[in-house]
Length: 199
Image (cartoon, rainbow, N blue to C red):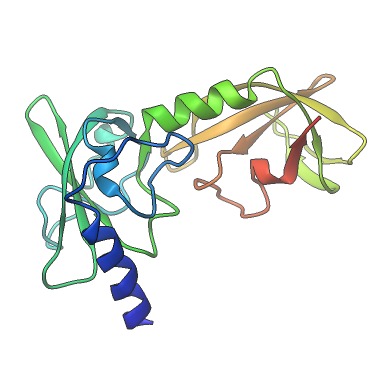
């Protein structure tokens, strides 16, 4: 396991020095991290954020959630299989500790990825690939089946009970609206946009 983790992070680190254009179809790319340089990002939770590239103190101030930062650099940790991504906002600097185990659930949302997903799905008709229960925005749990057609009315930054931001697609059918977390930020692995198909 350690070897796989080390190999993954070495692959990530090898690409740090080469600037690449950002593919906004992914939030945090598995390679070519340098393509994030200059990208704006929104902090969506406090997971793996630090005031400096050390493991000593995690950031715990919830006021940072929702703030915008710019990705300025990334560096490979020489002692551990991880990469530190530096983010700056008006003189404030924070670091995201990127590992192969947390890259699918990052504490930051790259704005270009968010906007691309919004453009791809807003106003699109969708249907469920399989019957599933969802909680509506009114708080009612209902079973929706594959015959139901939904329309994506947008992608919103919703707050959960822990005050983290969960980017979620708003899908409407009749009088019901459900919020489906954007892939990579799911609170329930079954509750993702992958459960829906465009018509």
